[in-house]
Length: 332
Image (cartoon, rainbow, N blue to C red):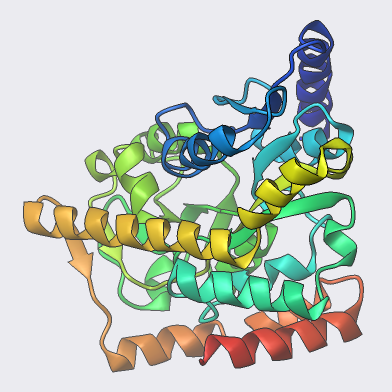
């Protein structure tokens, strides 16, 4: 993984050197241009902000991992290879430790709920250290992840015993251990192939990815567990931001922070609901909706998750405080 990141960063630096005279600010996305976050979030944000900025201070999207692989995005922004990027904080374990609190089962059902948690923590100052090198444009989360299975419907935690599943993160692997499953790390574009070949028997992910990667063709069983969720961020290079005129900084400030994050969350949640509704009406895949007893069984199986998350953090006291605050916010 480290070698891949170094290689991707080296290639990106070469591209940066070639285009160093370009006046636009580079926005990196590991998704293709038609991908959900590339088209519906990043490009939409760019289209709205560019007319308000001065000449020579325009943003331009570089999609499809043109500037670097998914795990490299945060480092690309920090180094200035990208001026802004879509970042999945859990792709780089240890870099954004407190942000990962939203991965704990039961913490997040909707993007709006997770987004409120992360923005409240940020406003409290609990995330200051991990974002010290960045200008935060938006902190948000995915909705809760469903289980997508190939061969059988899953209702109870024990149904996953002995199975191999695509893991979303390091902590996701810990959660799989708790239910007797094995975690396999697979890049997003390769999930379909690995499900089809039987390398893994399932994955936890969001409905938009289910549609984008046509997982309905190979994993027709969906369990609405909200097993975990992933934090997301749009981050800007702090030096790039500081070098802008006061007028341009004011424009960016007006399109950053909680308000922008809440807009993103609304788009995410609306899309998630629309995709689920479309698949339900199509009747070509099977949904497992958990009753109260089943939900209680999942909660019991993952009861040790909060403690495991705290134990994995470098500062246990800080993690305990973040967990307490996030738990309070999750119930509101």
